[in-house]
Length: 300
Image (cartoon, rainbow, N blue to C red; front, side):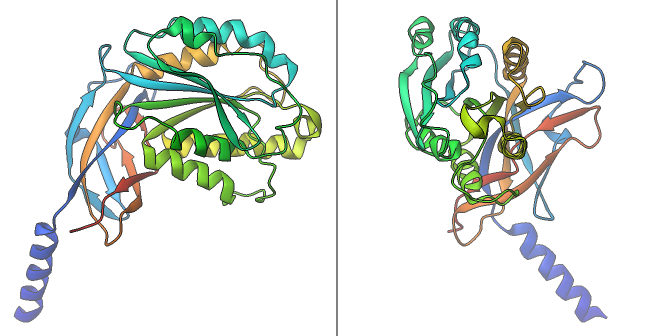
């Protein structure tokens, strides 16, 4: 019996002394009921890596003066109804706070065509929002375009990086209608690895992909999967064009004001890569939107 106790204690000691690596991620606090979010401190948040609880070492609220980068990523195959939303989007971009660097890009043929580079001149950025060209880009995955946009992201910028993606979500490369679509997952991995939070707004495509109930349904599923797994939110009203993007944009603006940098000690693996985590607030009347995975460097 004594031998087993000693063995357990030695195993526990090795686990307790196992080195961790500091990892930070952007999270968003939400009210669980009603509209009031109680005061939340680092010790209120629980982080699990697999089944292993990990120590939370910091929680810093991102305030009005903290810089962030936001890219408006628009599907160039959007239906003509999108064009009526251009003034709404331009007004929203112009009203971004001074600490925001905004870029605009269009998704077409699996690529991201930047029409406005990251800038704090929001009037200049708003000029990058143009009419969608329509047919020609509807048969290619917007998730490839997201991947390229993320890979083009300037290095060494602020920790908070946001994409607002306007798309039907239809994946046209036949990756399959299931949650394990390789093109959708590749876009999600790219965003997670770069620490990008993605918000999605459903806007139908032109052509058959834009009115096929089956494709539209899975397009919305993919957009929801993308937003949920990166710590964002997905917005849609049925399968038609929204009456206005304004309520969605207002909601995103509110979420940007409730974001924090969460830091915790992750368990390093032999190879660097994305590790599944579960982030929650178990004992307070609040919930938290957070990525499902974080990038963890390899152990030394």
